[in-house]
Length: 453
Image 1: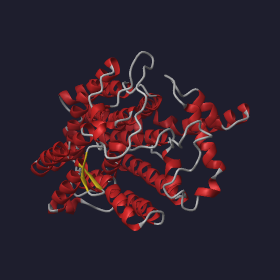
Image 2: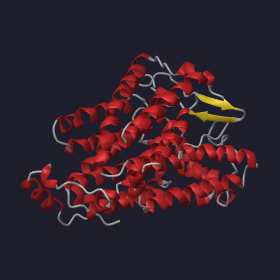
Image 3: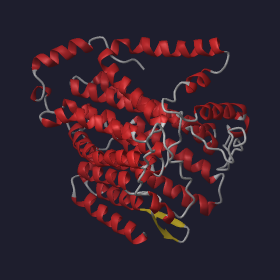
Protein backbone atom coordinates (compact mmCIF):
# COMPACT_ATOMS: atom_id res chain seq x y z
CA UNK A 1 0.00 0.00 0.00
CA UNK A 2 3.00 2.33 0.23
CA UNK A 3 3.05 2.77 -3.56
CA UNK A 4 -0.66 3.58 -3.47
CA UNK A 5 -0.14 6.11 -0.71
CA UNK A 6 2.69 7.75 -2.62
CA UNK A 7 0.60 7.84 -5.80
CA UNK A 8 -2.36 9.42 -4.00
CA UNK A 9 -0.07 11.98 -2.38
CA UNK A 10 1.54 12.91 -5.71
CA UNK A 11 -1.79 13.19 -7.52
CA UNK A 12 -3.34 15.36 -4.82
CA UNK A 13 -0.18 17.47 -4.62
CA UNK A 14 -0.43 18.19 -8.34
CA UNK A 15 -4.06 19.22 -7.89
CA UNK A 16 -3.35 21.61 -5.01
CA UNK A 17 -0.58 23.22 -7.07
CA UNK A 18 -2.61 23.84 -10.25
CA UNK A 19 -6.05 24.64 -8.79
CA UNK A 20 -7.16 27.98 -7.41
CA UNK A 21 -6.47 28.19 -3.62
CA UNK A 22 -10.09 27.70 -2.44
CA UNK A 23 -10.56 24.67 -4.71
CA UNK A 24 -7.07 23.40 -3.87
CA UNK A 25 -8.05 23.48 -0.20
CA UNK A 26 -11.23 21.56 -1.03
CA UNK A 27 -9.08 18.93 -2.78
CA UNK A 28 -7.00 18.66 0.39
CA UNK A 29 -10.19 18.17 2.44
CA UNK A 30 -11.30 15.49 -0.03
CA UNK A 31 -8.06 13.61 0.63
CA UNK A 32 -8.75 13.73 4.37
CA UNK A 33 -12.29 12.46 3.86
CA UNK A 34 -11.47 9.52 1.63
CA UNK A 35 -7.91 8.35 2.27
CA UNK A 36 -7.12 6.75 5.65
CA UNK A 37 -4.37 8.25 7.77
CA UNK A 38 -3.29 4.75 8.83
CA UNK A 39 -1.89 4.10 5.33
CA UNK A 40 1.58 5.59 5.46
CA UNK A 41 5.02 5.70 3.92
CA UNK A 42 7.51 4.29 6.44
CA UNK A 43 11.01 5.69 6.54
CA UNK A 44 12.72 4.01 9.46
CA UNK A 45 10.64 4.88 12.52
CA UNK A 46 8.94 7.80 10.76
CA UNK A 47 5.46 7.34 9.30
CA UNK A 48 4.49 9.85 6.62
CA UNK A 49 0.84 10.07 5.61
CA UNK A 50 -0.40 11.33 2.26
CA UNK A 51 -2.10 14.20 4.08
CA UNK A 52 1.20 15.37 5.57
CA UNK A 53 2.84 15.46 2.15
CA UNK A 54 -0.05 17.41 0.65
CA UNK A 55 -0.16 19.80 3.62
CA UNK A 56 3.49 20.68 3.06
CA UNK A 57 3.02 21.13 -0.70
CA UNK A 58 -0.08 23.31 -0.31
CA UNK A 59 1.59 25.42 2.38
CA UNK A 60 4.63 26.06 0.16
CA UNK A 61 2.30 26.94 -2.72
CA UNK A 62 0.43 29.45 -0.53
CA UNK A 63 3.58 31.02 0.88
CA UNK A 64 5.01 31.57 -2.61
CA UNK A 65 1.95 33.60 -3.68
CA UNK A 66 2.41 37.23 -2.57
CA UNK A 67 -1.30 38.00 -2.87
CA UNK A 68 -2.14 35.26 -0.34
CA UNK A 69 0.59 36.40 2.05
CA UNK A 70 -0.69 39.97 1.88
CA UNK A 71 -4.20 38.82 2.80
CA UNK A 72 -2.96 37.09 5.94
CA UNK A 73 -3.33 39.25 9.04
CA UNK A 74 -2.69 37.92 12.52
CA UNK A 75 -5.93 37.47 14.44
CA UNK A 76 -6.51 36.64 18.12
CA UNK A 77 -7.48 33.09 17.14
CA UNK A 78 -4.16 32.66 15.32
CA UNK A 79 -2.30 33.62 18.47
CA UNK A 80 -4.35 31.24 20.59
CA UNK A 81 -3.76 28.34 18.21
CA UNK A 82 -0.02 29.16 18.17
CA UNK A 83 -0.02 29.20 21.98
CA UNK A 84 -1.82 25.85 22.12
CA UNK A 85 0.71 24.35 19.69
CA UNK A 86 3.52 25.61 21.91
CA UNK A 87 1.90 23.98 24.95
CA UNK A 88 1.20 20.67 23.19
CA UNK A 89 4.72 20.47 21.80
CA UNK A 90 6.54 21.79 24.86
CA UNK A 91 4.80 19.50 27.36
CA UNK A 92 5.54 16.48 25.17
CA UNK A 93 9.26 17.29 25.19
CA UNK A 94 9.18 17.14 28.98
CA UNK A 95 7.69 13.64 28.93
CA UNK A 96 9.45 11.85 26.03
CA UNK A 97 13.04 11.24 24.95
CA UNK A 98 14.21 13.93 22.53
CA UNK A 99 14.22 11.75 19.39
CA UNK A 100 10.75 10.34 20.03
CA UNK A 101 9.39 13.77 20.90
CA UNK A 102 10.73 15.31 17.68
CA UNK A 103 9.16 12.56 15.55
CA UNK A 104 5.89 12.65 17.45
CA UNK A 105 5.43 16.41 17.52
CA UNK A 106 6.70 16.89 13.98
CA UNK A 107 3.84 14.78 12.67
CA UNK A 108 1.43 16.44 15.10
CA UNK A 109 2.29 19.93 13.83
CA UNK A 110 1.81 18.84 10.21
CA UNK A 111 -1.57 17.39 11.14
CA UNK A 112 -2.83 20.33 13.18
CA UNK A 113 -0.94 23.64 13.14
CA UNK A 114 -0.03 23.56 9.46
CA UNK A 115 -3.52 22.34 8.48
CA UNK A 116 -4.88 25.40 10.31
CA UNK A 117 -2.38 27.67 8.56
CA UNK A 118 -3.22 26.26 5.13
CA UNK A 119 -6.91 27.00 5.70
CA UNK A 120 -6.10 30.54 6.82
CA UNK A 121 -4.03 31.21 3.71
CA UNK A 122 -6.42 29.65 1.18
CA UNK A 123 -9.58 31.32 2.50
CA UNK A 124 -9.10 35.05 1.93
CA UNK A 125 -12.68 36.35 1.75
CA UNK A 126 -16.32 35.31 1.79
CA UNK A 127 -16.30 34.37 -1.90
CA UNK A 128 -13.36 32.01 -1.38
CA UNK A 129 -15.12 30.56 1.68
CA UNK A 130 -18.32 29.92 -0.27
CA UNK A 131 -16.42 28.35 -3.19
CA UNK A 132 -14.68 25.96 -0.81
CA UNK A 133 -17.92 24.98 0.92
CA UNK A 134 -19.66 24.32 -2.40
CA UNK A 135 -16.95 21.84 -3.37
CA UNK A 136 -16.86 20.24 0.08
CA UNK A 137 -20.65 19.85 0.01
CA UNK A 138 -20.41 17.91 -3.26
CA UNK A 139 -17.51 15.84 -1.94
CA UNK A 140 -19.47 14.85 1.17
CA UNK A 141 -22.34 13.38 -0.87
CA UNK A 142 -20.52 10.17 -1.94
CA UNK A 143 -19.13 9.87 1.60
CA UNK A 144 -22.68 9.95 2.98
CA UNK A 145 -23.76 7.37 0.39
CA UNK A 146 -20.89 5.15 1.51
CA UNK A 147 -22.08 5.56 5.09
CA UNK A 148 -25.59 4.47 4.18
CA UNK A 149 -24.24 1.43 2.31
CA UNK A 150 -22.05 0.43 5.25
CA UNK A 151 -24.88 0.97 7.71
CA UNK A 152 -27.42 -1.05 5.74
CA UNK A 153 -25.19 -3.89 4.52
CA UNK A 154 -22.30 -4.09 6.98
CA UNK A 155 -19.85 -4.01 4.06
CA UNK A 156 -16.88 -1.81 5.00
CA UNK A 157 -14.43 -1.52 2.10
CA UNK A 158 -11.75 0.25 4.16
CA UNK A 159 -11.67 -2.41 6.86
CA UNK A 160 -9.31 -4.71 4.93
CA UNK A 161 -6.79 -1.86 4.60
CA UNK A 162 -6.25 -1.68 8.34
CA UNK A 163 -3.85 -4.61 8.22
CA UNK A 164 -1.33 -2.29 6.54
CA UNK A 165 -1.34 0.12 9.49
CA UNK A 166 2.12 0.29 11.13
CA UNK A 167 0.62 0.74 14.59
CA UNK A 168 -2.09 -1.05 16.52
CA UNK A 169 -5.68 -0.11 15.76
CA UNK A 170 -8.50 -0.84 18.17
CA UNK A 171 -11.41 -1.65 15.87
CA UNK A 172 -14.79 -0.59 17.20
CA UNK A 173 -17.48 -3.22 17.41
CA UNK A 174 -19.52 -3.14 14.18
CA UNK A 175 -22.41 -5.18 15.52
CA UNK A 176 -25.99 -4.17 14.81
CA UNK A 177 -27.59 -1.21 16.53
CA UNK A 178 -31.31 -0.81 16.04
CA UNK A 179 -31.01 -3.04 12.98
CA UNK A 180 -28.13 -1.11 11.35
CA UNK A 181 -24.34 -1.41 11.31
CA UNK A 182 -22.03 1.39 12.42
CA UNK A 183 -20.46 3.08 9.38
CA UNK A 184 -16.79 4.05 9.69
CA UNK A 185 -15.63 5.02 6.18
CA UNK A 186 -11.93 5.82 5.92
CA UNK A 187 -11.82 6.96 9.56
CA UNK A 188 -11.76 3.53 11.17
CA UNK A 189 -14.17 4.71 13.87
CA UNK A 190 -17.88 5.36 13.65
CA UNK A 191 -17.91 8.38 15.97
CA UNK A 192 -15.12 10.07 14.00
CA UNK A 193 -17.02 9.33 10.78
CA UNK A 194 -20.30 10.82 11.99
CA UNK A 195 -18.66 13.85 13.58
CA UNK A 196 -17.20 15.00 10.26
CA UNK A 197 -20.67 15.57 8.77
CA UNK A 198 -21.69 17.57 11.83
CA UNK A 199 -18.60 19.79 11.47
CA UNK A 200 -19.59 20.89 7.97
CA UNK A 201 -23.39 20.85 8.29
CA UNK A 202 -23.80 24.52 9.37
CA UNK A 203 -21.55 25.69 6.53
CA UNK A 204 -23.44 23.69 3.91
CA UNK A 205 -26.77 24.91 5.30
CA UNK A 206 -25.43 28.47 4.98
CA UNK A 207 -25.36 28.01 1.19
CA UNK A 208 -29.13 28.66 1.23
CA UNK A 209 -28.22 32.35 0.98
CA UNK A 210 -26.56 31.88 -2.43
CA UNK A 211 -28.29 32.81 -5.66
CA UNK A 212 -29.63 30.27 -8.14
CA UNK A 213 -29.61 26.53 -7.73
CA UNK A 214 -27.09 26.57 -4.86
CA UNK A 215 -29.61 28.33 -2.66
CA UNK A 216 -32.12 25.60 -3.47
CA UNK A 217 -29.75 22.66 -3.20
CA UNK A 218 -28.48 23.75 0.21
CA UNK A 219 -31.48 22.08 1.81
CA UNK A 220 -31.21 18.59 0.23
CA UNK A 221 -27.42 18.70 0.68
CA UNK A 222 -27.92 19.43 4.37
CA UNK A 223 -30.28 16.47 4.63
CA UNK A 224 -27.67 14.26 2.96
CA UNK A 225 -25.11 15.33 5.57
CA UNK A 226 -27.56 14.57 8.37
CA UNK A 227 -28.13 11.10 6.92
CA UNK A 228 -24.38 10.61 6.69
CA UNK A 229 -23.96 11.50 10.36
CA UNK A 230 -26.81 9.21 11.40
CA UNK A 231 -25.31 6.30 9.43
CA UNK A 232 -22.56 6.12 12.05
CA UNK A 233 -25.20 4.69 14.42
CA UNK A 234 -23.36 6.27 17.36
CA UNK A 235 -25.04 8.31 20.05
CA UNK A 236 -22.40 11.06 19.86
CA UNK A 237 -23.12 12.08 16.24
CA UNK A 238 -26.86 11.56 16.75
CA UNK A 239 -26.95 13.93 19.73
CA UNK A 240 -24.65 16.35 17.88
CA UNK A 241 -27.02 16.44 14.90
CA UNK A 242 -29.94 17.29 17.18
CA UNK A 243 -27.89 19.93 18.95
CA UNK A 244 -26.56 21.62 15.80
CA UNK A 245 -30.06 21.73 14.29
CA UNK A 246 -31.31 23.46 17.45
CA UNK A 247 -28.40 25.92 17.24
CA UNK A 248 -29.20 26.74 13.62
CA UNK A 249 -32.90 27.11 14.43
CA UNK A 250 -32.05 29.59 17.20
CA UNK A 251 -30.87 32.01 14.49
CA UNK A 252 -34.52 32.98 14.12
CA UNK A 253 -34.89 33.54 17.89
CA UNK A 254 -31.70 35.42 18.75
CA UNK A 255 -33.38 37.59 21.34
CA UNK A 256 -34.07 34.46 23.39
CA UNK A 257 -30.46 33.26 23.37
CA UNK A 258 -29.47 34.80 26.70
CA UNK A 259 -32.57 33.40 28.40
CA UNK A 260 -31.89 29.97 26.93
CA UNK A 261 -28.30 29.97 28.23
CA UNK A 262 -29.44 31.07 31.68
CA UNK A 263 -32.15 28.40 31.61
CA UNK A 264 -29.60 25.70 30.76
CA UNK A 265 -27.37 26.80 33.63
CA UNK A 266 -30.24 26.86 36.13
CA UNK A 267 -31.45 23.48 34.89
CA UNK A 268 -28.03 21.92 35.51
CA UNK A 269 -28.04 23.32 39.05
CA UNK A 270 -31.59 22.08 39.68
CA UNK A 271 -30.82 18.62 38.28
CA UNK A 272 -27.80 18.31 40.52
CA UNK A 273 -29.76 19.31 43.63
CA UNK A 274 -32.89 17.29 42.84
CA UNK A 275 -31.01 14.08 41.95
CA UNK A 276 -28.41 14.44 44.68
CA UNK A 277 -25.64 13.54 42.23
CA UNK A 278 -23.55 15.37 39.62
CA UNK A 279 -25.78 16.78 36.89
CA UNK A 280 -23.69 15.18 34.13
CA UNK A 281 -24.54 11.73 35.48
CA UNK A 282 -28.22 12.48 34.95
CA UNK A 283 -27.72 14.03 31.51
CA UNK A 284 -25.71 11.14 30.06
CA UNK A 285 -28.34 8.71 31.33
CA UNK A 286 -30.82 10.22 28.88
CA UNK A 287 -28.45 11.34 26.10
CA UNK A 288 -28.18 7.99 24.34
CA UNK A 289 -31.00 7.84 21.77
CA UNK A 290 -29.71 4.57 20.26
CA UNK A 291 -27.75 3.17 23.19
CA UNK A 292 -24.15 3.68 24.19
CA UNK A 293 -21.85 3.97 27.16
CA UNK A 294 -22.94 7.28 28.63
CA UNK A 295 -22.11 6.07 32.13
CA UNK A 296 -18.51 5.66 30.93
CA UNK A 297 -18.31 9.37 30.08
CA UNK A 298 -19.65 10.34 33.48
CA UNK A 299 -17.29 8.00 35.34
CA UNK A 300 -14.34 9.36 33.36
CA UNK A 301 -15.10 12.86 34.62
CA UNK A 302 -15.30 11.50 38.14
CA UNK A 303 -11.86 9.90 37.77
CA UNK A 304 -10.34 13.11 36.39
CA UNK A 305 -11.73 15.15 39.27
CA UNK A 306 -10.66 12.61 41.87
CA UNK A 307 -7.07 12.41 40.55
CA UNK A 308 -6.73 16.09 39.66
CA UNK A 309 -3.70 16.42 41.92
CA UNK A 310 -1.85 13.78 39.90
CA UNK A 311 -2.24 15.28 36.43
CA UNK A 312 -2.79 19.03 36.74
CA UNK A 313 0.92 19.91 36.63
CA UNK A 314 2.10 18.05 33.50
CA UNK A 315 -0.35 15.21 32.88
CA UNK A 316 0.73 11.60 32.83
CA UNK A 317 3.47 12.00 30.24
CA UNK A 318 1.59 10.06 27.59
CA UNK A 319 1.08 7.08 29.90
CA UNK A 320 -2.22 5.42 30.77
CA UNK A 321 -3.63 7.16 33.88
CA UNK A 322 -4.77 3.81 35.26
CA UNK A 323 -8.50 4.42 35.30
CA UNK A 324 -9.33 1.31 33.26
CA UNK A 325 -10.47 -0.78 36.20
CA UNK A 326 -12.90 1.92 37.33
CA UNK A 327 -14.22 2.11 33.77
CA UNK A 328 -14.63 -1.66 33.46
CA UNK A 329 -11.92 -2.17 30.82
CA UNK A 330 -8.28 -3.19 30.51
CA UNK A 331 -7.16 0.31 29.48
CA UNK A 332 -8.31 3.89 29.92
CA UNK A 333 -10.46 4.93 26.98
CA UNK A 334 -10.45 8.72 27.32
CA UNK A 335 -13.66 9.73 25.57
CA UNK A 336 -13.38 13.41 26.44
CA UNK A 337 -11.13 15.86 24.59
CA UNK A 338 -10.82 18.16 27.58
CA UNK A 339 -9.72 15.33 29.87
CA UNK A 340 -7.44 14.02 27.13
CA UNK A 341 -5.73 17.42 26.97
CA UNK A 342 -5.27 17.31 30.74
CA UNK A 343 -3.91 13.76 30.77
CA UNK A 344 -1.45 14.56 27.96
CA UNK A 345 -0.41 18.13 28.79
CA UNK A 346 -1.68 18.97 32.27
CA UNK A 347 -3.95 21.81 33.28
CA UNK A 348 -2.11 24.16 30.90
CA UNK A 349 -3.25 21.97 28.00
CA UNK A 350 -6.88 22.22 29.13
CA UNK A 351 -6.55 26.00 29.39
CA UNK A 352 -5.02 26.19 25.90
CA UNK A 353 -7.85 24.14 24.39
CA UNK A 354 -10.58 26.11 26.16
CA UNK A 355 -8.96 29.40 25.12
CA UNK A 356 -8.96 28.38 21.45
CA UNK A 357 -12.64 27.44 21.58
CA UNK A 358 -13.58 30.59 23.52
CA UNK A 359 -11.77 32.90 21.09
CA UNK A 360 -13.35 31.08 18.12
CA UNK A 361 -16.78 31.80 19.63
CA UNK A 362 -15.72 35.38 20.31
CA UNK A 363 -14.62 35.88 16.71
CA UNK A 364 -17.98 34.61 15.43
CA UNK A 365 -19.77 37.02 17.75
CA UNK A 366 -17.66 39.94 16.56
CA UNK A 367 -18.35 39.08 12.93
CA UNK A 368 -22.06 38.93 13.67
CA UNK A 369 -22.11 42.27 15.49
CA UNK A 370 -19.89 44.15 13.02
CA UNK A 371 -21.44 42.92 9.78
CA UNK A 372 -24.15 44.94 8.04
CA UNK A 373 -24.69 42.30 5.33
CA UNK A 374 -27.33 39.77 6.50
CA UNK A 375 -25.38 37.00 4.75
CA UNK A 376 -22.41 37.63 7.02
CA UNK A 377 -24.57 37.63 10.11
CA UNK A 378 -25.94 34.26 9.09
CA UNK A 379 -22.44 33.00 8.38
CA UNK A 380 -21.28 34.14 11.81
CA UNK A 381 -24.17 32.25 13.38
CA UNK A 382 -23.25 29.11 11.43
CA UNK A 383 -19.62 29.33 12.54
CA UNK A 384 -20.66 29.86 16.14
CA UNK A 385 -22.96 26.84 15.90
CA UNK A 386 -20.01 24.73 14.78
CA UNK A 387 -17.90 25.67 17.81
CA UNK A 388 -20.83 25.19 20.20
CA UNK A 389 -21.35 21.72 18.75
CA UNK A 390 -17.62 20.96 18.90
CA UNK A 391 -17.67 21.76 22.62
CA UNK A 392 -20.50 19.25 23.06
CA UNK A 393 -18.63 16.66 20.98
CA UNK A 394 -15.47 17.17 23.02
CA UNK A 395 -17.33 16.23 26.21
CA UNK A 396 -18.09 12.77 24.80
CA UNK A 397 -15.09 11.84 22.63
CA UNK A 398 -11.45 12.73 22.00
CA UNK A 399 -10.93 13.22 18.29
CA UNK A 400 -8.22 11.56 16.22
CA UNK A 401 -7.53 10.22 12.71
CA UNK A 402 -8.53 12.59 9.91
CA UNK A 403 -11.22 14.15 12.11
CA UNK A 404 -8.50 15.94 14.07
CA UNK A 405 -7.07 17.44 10.88
CA UNK A 406 -10.52 18.44 9.65
CA UNK A 407 -11.25 20.15 12.96
CA UNK A 408 -8.18 22.33 12.52
CA UNK A 409 -9.16 23.01 8.91
CA UNK A 410 -12.57 24.22 10.07
CA UNK A 411 -10.89 26.23 12.83
CA UNK A 412 -8.69 27.87 10.20
CA UNK A 413 -11.75 28.75 8.13
CA UNK A 414 -13.27 30.37 11.20
CA UNK A 415 -10.02 32.26 11.71
CA UNK A 416 -10.23 33.60 8.16
CA UNK A 417 -13.75 34.93 8.78
CA UNK A 418 -12.20 37.96 10.49
CA UNK A 419 -11.23 39.16 6.99
CA UNK A 420 -14.77 39.02 5.67
CA UNK A 421 -15.64 42.56 6.81
CA UNK A 422 -12.30 44.21 7.45
CA UNK A 423 -9.88 42.24 5.29
CA UNK A 424 -8.09 43.41 2.16
CA UNK A 425 -10.67 41.78 -0.11
CA UNK A 426 -13.96 43.62 0.28
CA UNK A 427 -17.42 42.20 -0.25
CA UNK A 428 -19.59 43.35 -3.08
CA UNK A 429 -22.53 45.51 -2.21
CA UNK A 430 -25.25 43.47 -0.59
CA UNK A 431 -27.79 44.96 -3.00
CA UNK A 432 -26.27 42.82 -5.74
CA UNK A 433 -27.61 39.68 -4.09
CA UNK A 434 -30.36 40.87 -1.79
CA UNK A 435 -33.48 42.95 -2.52
CA UNK A 436 -33.42 46.23 -0.64
CA UNK A 437 -36.71 45.50 1.12
CA UNK A 438 -35.29 42.19 2.43
CA UNK A 439 -32.26 43.96 3.87
CA UNK A 440 -34.51 46.42 5.71
CA UNK A 441 -36.61 43.54 7.03
CA UNK A 442 -33.58 41.65 8.31
CA UNK A 443 -32.17 44.82 9.84
CA UNK A 444 -35.42 45.36 11.74
CA UNK A 445 -35.42 41.73 12.87
CA UNK A 446 -31.81 41.94 14.08
CA UNK A 447 -32.21 45.31 15.78
CA UNK A 448 -31.18 45.03 19.40
CA UNK A 449 -29.95 41.46 18.97
CA UNK A 450 -26.20 42.06 19.08
CA UNK A 451 -24.66 39.11 20.85
CA UNK A 452 -22.88 39.86 24.11
CA UNK A 453 -20.10 37.43 25.01
